[in-house]
Length: 148
Image (cartoon, rainbow, N blue to C red):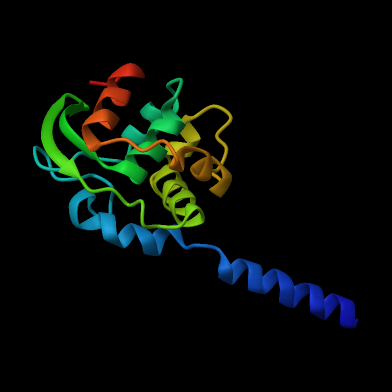
């Protein structure tokens, strides 16, 4: 009985220690909106676009790089052109970036549109953190995976 209670306490503590992607997304919602739809012509949508990115070879890595390093320059999402700057969120911990990416991948059903979707992990983020890029270099990475 004591082991069971101890186990439950440990599991509960681990759950509390995990980053909350939905709460972290509050920093993003000002631009991308709570619905993930963005603001046409100003801030691109995430809903529906994240699955497009994740279905591309290198898409997972690209999304991590965007959060770590930011993005700047002209892009096109769902036929609409945008030319702005997204700030880097490299100050967030690896597990927080993974949690945020998991939120934007699942909140609007994008994960259901990705064959074999796997949640992002802190280890994936950690592996790319040392790849320091400027926001303009992240834009070049976007082009390399086939996005405008």
